[in-house]
Length: 394
Length: 237
Ligand SMILES: Nc1ncnc2c1ncn2[C@@H]1O[C@H](COP(=O)(O)OP(=O)(O)O)[C@@H](O)[C@H]1O
Ligand SMILES: [Mg+2]
Image (cartoon, rainbow over all chains, first blue to last red; front, side, top):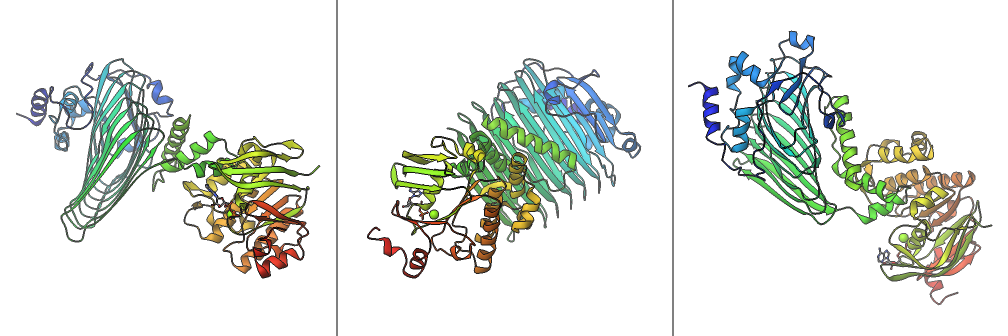
């Protein structure tokens, strides 16, 4: 039996398997992906996001693939952006990367994704440096849908790329996002993801990243509104000399239950990881933030988990650092606080209203200082953070 | 009409009485010094004038340009021209001096770059506001942000404490220039270090345990404070 058949067989048997982490909202309407060229969802356009710019892009609304494209210059260099289903038919070697980092039968959500997967395959050939962002957008606009997308991304040896993902919804439903990201040795990538979910929407994200020797990754995640609940804890396996900079911001809205964090495993010497996580917790919300760093070699890592409470909320921050190597240097900071009255008073005395003062402080708390993000992406990221800060106090 | 008039001001913080029946007037263009030992209530009085939250005026009135402002929010007083230079401004995490300066100057129209040059804070613009700055740097940044607001009355709280002699002379020069541009000044100093370097001081007030124990000509009294300390006021004047 071939690998693809085996994935299907394993998935079929796991459709009833509950998840081990986070809420289990159940599977709603599941739909086979179809190609139906058209417009991206308004919920995404409002974020100022479109797949139609940059070096290439992909957009899917519900199960409809509305756009896929690669700029001619990069197509000639061998860059591939393709609906995943199409890639499975046309590119035999995709099997090496397909459901290899995550098992399809992990739980009913990965299983449903394996069976109904939309999403895209992105391939950057070795040595190719993509100088404009690749934009991917997912939207849910169909009431009660469970959107299942699978992103398989391969950045070849020494290749460079900036990936931008935006997801949003306008209805009640679930988004399941499975991402397998492969950085081959010396590959360099930035990965920026922005999400915004309505009140009664659930996100279940499964992200695994394989980082080859001397590869570099900057990973930014901004969630403007957490909806009903999130389960998302990306995981990174880092080989010798790999560098990771991770910076995430989640605004946990009233009534929301968020299960998040990150897992970083350092497998080779000279690995360096920096994990920054910021949670903005509104009244009546719950957040579990699990940040785990494991050193199986002499690695250096620093993690910092901060939470700002904007009302009566529960935040559990659970740091875990495990060293299995004598010279591993691992540190972790964690803090939970509220907006400082003194700082509000100070900013008011510099001419700002109470609301402006709070929004400045929230913006400062969630600030992301991108390292090498191209300016257009840095600007989008910043405008998302500003919008988040305004919504947090508005 | 005085620029600022305090009438029988009683101020408390968290229910604790700190300022007791203070009255004073500042005319437009004047420079007043407010002195007194640590804990006398000097900062509290400035905060009450600026309308800082948490500082409650229990009774009495504050008038600015003839209008009562006692109940106005801090930012409304800023718009009228009352600006406080904080003694110990809190750090603002994740916000750079430049970001805050841009926001302020967008409103006031003051060019922050040239002012930053002038006050020697140009190289501090990308630092976080009042975090990991030395005492002198913090005071310069705070004066910079305050002057961006185009004050008519600048309430200056201890800009000279913990600052070396050379920098005090520089600060005094800046304050002199500000005054020459028509800004009135109420300058708090508990050490008096800046007093002798200002080219002009119109009046001196001494606050002792929340009460004004002296208001008048600075000459003589200033020397007495500098040589003998505040104990000369212990028995009241
Ligand atoms: N936030 C506060 N809460 C309670 N007491 C305060 C507060 N701020 C100042 N005080 C008290 O008020 C008194 C005057 O303080 P302050 O105005 O800072 O004096 P000064 O500036 O003259 O040194 C002191 O006894 C001080 O402890
Ligand atoms: Mg003081």
